[in-house]
Length: 351
Ligand SMILES: NC(=O)c1ccc[n+]([C@@H]2O[C@H](COP(=O)([O-])OP(=O)(O)OC[C@H]3O[C@@H](n4cnc5c(N)ncnc54)[C@H](OP(=O)(O)O)[C@@H]3O)[C@@H](O)[C@H]2O)c1
Picture 1 (tube, protein in one colour):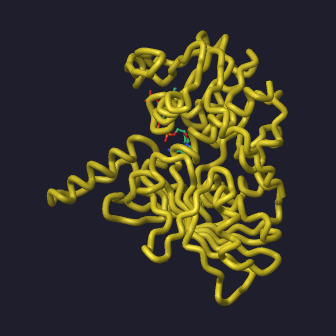
Picture 2 (cartoon, protein in one colour; picture 1 turned 90 degrees about the vertical axis):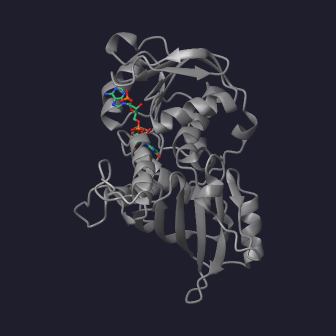
């Protein structure tokens, strides 16, 4: 397993970039890229925003860069970029990333297009960032639920070898994009007004409801999201044998995914105070384990933050080698835009 622990990026908040672009700037992840560029004070020679014809012409104010206008992406506009941040879905990534990389642009991709491509690194900087040499031109950002799961477990390596993980997710509507988030808001209003809530993006009502993740059920009976968690976690950790049994569910939460995790190791879990110390010392993770006040990881606390919250620690009474925990992380940030930007920051330091 990898668990490389890259700890330096936290101090790299002001990173200089050449000309960069965001592909999918109008979307839920795209908006978060723009927020984070401002928060992390990225110094870029120029920022270009790309979308489809639907958002072309839309103006977005970016502190330090003025009012930027989203352009319809096309073949003729792809030259001269140092870095391209992609969040426009797998088909757009498949179409444009090979074109950008021809010109030497580093592409960090949030879609699933290249994640399982053996030649493309799948990176969570704190866990396997040390795999990067600086020469890569396409780097994949993992599935958001996989990132939150692995971040929650990232500090626990001293416990022993991880052998099996059972994880249940409580995934927010924004995980399916900006329109899904808007649908949940409008359905909430409709239900409160006593009107029928019409599902359009999801197959089922998202307001005041819980349903199995909207990705298709695949041959093995698991849905696409569940299979991504398994395959991508194994790739990131370099452990093809790791047993991961996920159940992915949507809950009526706007933002941040929560996970209930049972992690089994090859030896007994140490006293929980030691486990808490491990979590406290892990970068990108924050302990939220306040038993006296029943305050454990919640999406409302994780939303808008960089850290994955971890807590509700218990040892399985039927198995001393199994740790039970909860995690909550903003999947638009650490599960998508923030992780991708940390990759780009790390690559700047390696160039
Ligand atoms: N939402 C999450 O929590 C999350 C987490 C991890 C990874 N991701 C991945 O990130 C990607 C974006 O997700 P999202 O949630 O931000 O989706 P979204 O809110 O639906 O946004 C999609 C973005 O893609 C753009 N786009 C769509 N078709 C395009 C085309 N043909 N050419 C150029 N731009 C196009 C859209 O631009 P227009 O407005 O112009 O159509 C929009 O900016 C997806 O691959 C998703 O799987 C999302």
